[in-house]
Amino acid sequence: MADFSRPGSLYGAIDLGARKQALEAQARREAAGPQAATSASIVDVTEETFTTEVIDRSMTTPVVLDLWSPRAPGSAQLSPVLEKVVGDLGGRAVLAKVNVDASPQIAQALRVQAVPTVLAIFQGQAVTGFQQVLPEQEVRRWLDELMGAVEQFYQANPDARPPAEPGEQEMPAGPPADPDLVAAEQAIDGGDLDAAAAAYERLLARAPGNEDAKMGLAGVSLIKRTESADPADVQRRLQDPADIEAQLLAADLEMLSGSVDEAFSRVIAVVKRTSGDERDKARRHLLGLFDALPAEDPSLAKARRALASALF
Image (cartoon, rainbow, N blue to C red; front, side):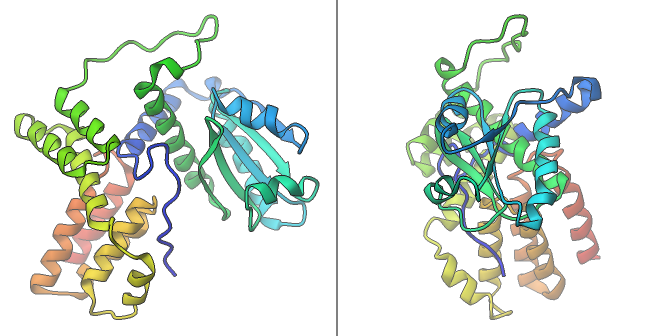
């Protein structure tokens, strides 16, 4: 059954640039090579040390909280993966491990319903997470998106960025942001999606190839299409295979929840089993979803091949 719940985000609704930031982080990691992958801090946390090791540290460094149990087979599978991928960040994040059997009050306070549960804590708050055992590739994607969102937070709030460690090189300053891009981001922060869309459209009229504007406009369109949707009603409507609108709306909700591959597969399945105007509508909807991702996103290449196969 599809899950249309929306995970928490540093910006409330959808982080329009998180996947682009994630891809850039991955490229930097690959360019640095394996010698650069030093172990991040990994700490065992108890009820007595939770405030110091998790809440206090999260004010400057994202903390990945691994809530595990020796009784849960999934924990034995997931914990080594978390140690590996967080370690590859070279200290830019902390992995905090909580044995929920030994520290039940932590699990109760965080309303943990199953183990393993993974939460990302930043600025003292849980901002995103997952509860199932994921393969390493998916854990890396989730973590890269988290780190990209953290970097966006610091770009928007430079005074909150912690001082650089001695000897750490600061990143060179990039070109000034386009005023329409700034206006769009301010409109999103203020909840004015129409103004944000207008700003992105102005930028695209001047620079049709601007990827940030393309992604931003697609993301705003996603939010507008789903802001009044009732996930339970969408789930009910999916029982009718002929309800194409429900399938497309379900794909939108999956995109917003981060289930990108699932959203693409859903619409491609609609393309396969329809014809005429319905097939064209599904195809155009899928192309609109493609615009929400950076061009180099690996999910795009796979989905484009699947779409071509469905069409021809």
